[in-house]
Length: 218
Image (cartoon, rainbow, N blue to C red; front, side, top):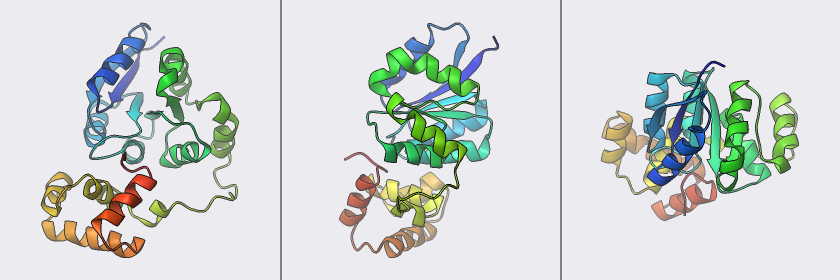
């Protein structure tokens, strides 16, 4: 079998090492790169063009969902597997909407990561058993009406979602400008647009919004 090239991204060294050890048990798996945050993961994916990116859901600078959106936009053939501690229908929907085709609970990684990698390498979805039917249905019928309201984050542009996460992490406009390659004036404009669109009036309200929408961890 042709080697499956895999990029791993998690902000905890011990988790990355654990995933690497699990993948090392299969001769056809090749870890081609490691990243400690979402922004680094996107840059490495563009450089290395892996078959699969294994991304932690919660990462600094750029969370797993935003990193997924950017990777899939730049590399449509690269599949994404999201690692998380939580199992919910809402999360499955968000993962699919971002462009990832797989979701794996970290508590099940030891027993299921090989199966997940094989499935995604064949461009097939992989979700926890309790969510597999839902995930597959939404993947096959993306335009089917849903009784769920659109998430508030859908009101924001991709760049604005990045700015929300960075503000919630305590970054200043100068920090944000440097990280995103913007002028400070443009960073301030994004901040103002975010506050207006979401009808927020303080940084503390924005942080609460980011936590509730799983852009950052509490």
